[in-house]
Picture 1 (cartoon, protein in one colour):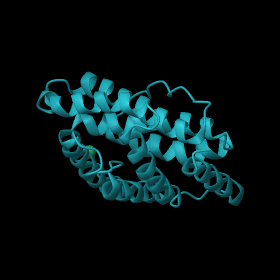
Picture 2 (cartoon, helix red, strand yellow):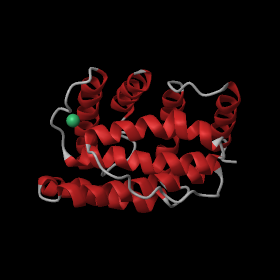
Picture 3 (tube, helix red, strand yellow):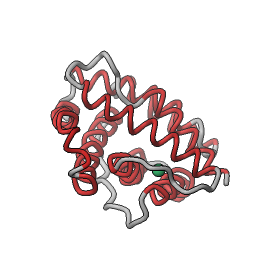
Picture 4 (cartoon, protein in one colour):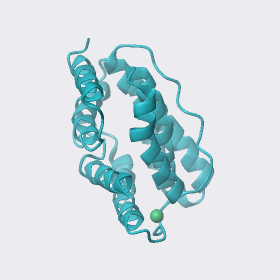
Length: 209
Ligand SMILES: [Zn+2]
């Protein structure tokens, strides 16, 4: 039961942050709208999950978002170099359970881990995660999301910018991701050792080391 409440908290944090530095990156208005919808549907669905109720109606992009997070979470843990057993059980597992509740099925292949500086790990995985979410959204909801073609185009453009260190999007997303992760990881019952490791790793990302 506890992991359901943790995910509910994550959807709350996500709802607040939306992982989008709104206002700092121009030209992402349609994408921001779509993310807002995803974030609020995620919150509703997580609330129902905690109460063991059937999953409320939500859009295919919401499924794509969370299945994308599962693929991302795996690669993120490997790229950071944290204890894989702990990370898998405490972080990837609950996300996987939630994704299955939203849309039963097999997980997509995990993203490729990145061996680079922490900042580049974060941004490269943001880009590959975005790419996967676009792909799954098209696969699962092509007709439904035709109306979001503007958002998809913006996401595609963003993906390129996130791979360009020093671009305005790179800097804005790094700052907003670091804020987001610090908030997010607090909700997971990691061991003291792992917590310290993650904190130090995020600090290196912040310092651009
Ligand atoms: Zn739902």
